[in-house]
Length: 103
Length: 230
Image (cartoon, rainbow over all chains, first blue to last red; front, side, top):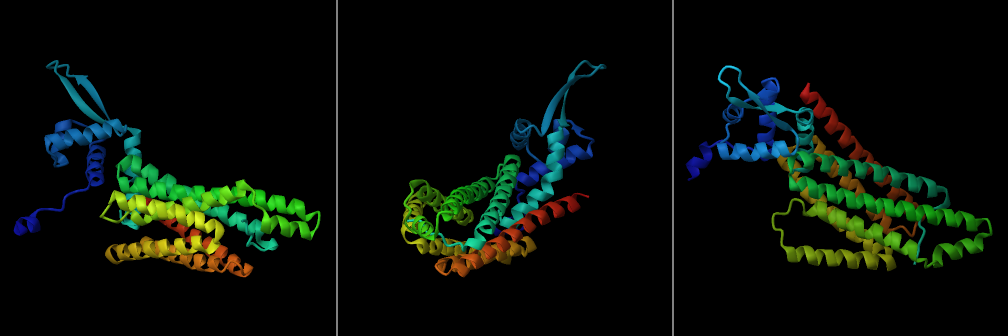
């Protein structure tokens, strides 16, 4: 048990996961497929669903459905909103604030 | 019973210091809530509520003192005897209520900031503490230094908590926060001696220095956040 604890990486906080997701979205020009985001953010399907629902609820990310002309299949893309970009801007400030108060 | 500790020459400065404190506290409240909305970190919400309560306390004392000083200035035109009667023996309910609100919200806010880092959150403890806060606020209406002693104890506990946090994170901002709370605590020690008007003035000036440090922390956090982004 102890050995497992030593080797496993530190669990990311909720804020860190959200910041990672937003960062990945920004790196991809503000547009990404949900599955790509899931792999790049290193999340399971279940966790990703929960975080994504929060991000959408808070207006940081929105979903866009587009229909492919070639195979007529609809594709879901995640789009970073202006509020999401603001979050990214304020992230370091939030981290600094939380660190100051030890929370 | 109302007691005016501020010397006549300090009455306007007195209110200005409290207005400044109110603005700084409200800024902390806004930042905490804004961050909470984004992160859903409940500790940020609690911190915000703590700062909000103390800011409301400052607002209550500003409004009460403003009306009180205005009334005293008006009466002063009719002679010194009436002034003394109004200052020391008035039992007007609005003033008592205003100062009671100030005491209650200050203690409540400080208690929330203190509880923020405690792992054991027993509901019974919270109820008991709330009761003691109400008792201390009521007792403070009759014996003014009971309130300041309670604030001093709470600030001592907060300083100890944040000092432990500083030992862990070694953040300059946390060090500034500890210094700020420490100066505020020294100010409270002077308020205990408020019967000496000069002690009241020193207490107020220390409060001003403390809130200036709080403001410097806000500026530093914003600046650092901005520079890390670029």
